[in-house]
Length: 105
Image (cartoon, rainbow, N blue to C red; front, side, top):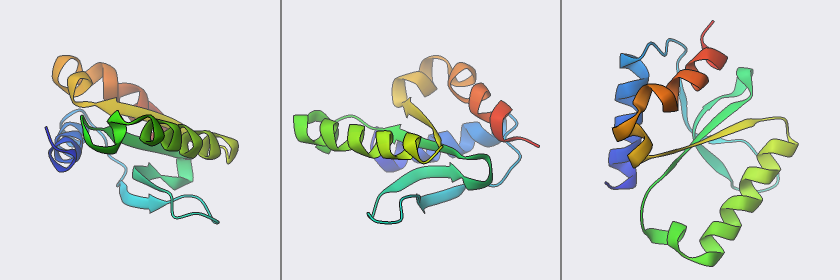
């Protein structure tokens, strides 16, 4: 599953499982870097990263860069959720319901 397919699947499941609050895509969360989150609810301080297979995620530097990004988001007060295609396929409710509970009004 490509990253764009994974993000589309996330959005579809978000709506199906009851996510009501609109989501911001490609949200720039860090003031001094170009870091963006795949999905965000800035008022709730929640970010979601869809972790696809392959690409930069497979290299050690890609993994290390992601760790730096997630740590910076945490220091800013964000709760960072990481979602994989396997999680969405095997247990979509388990993957999304904690996020929905945090952001739904």
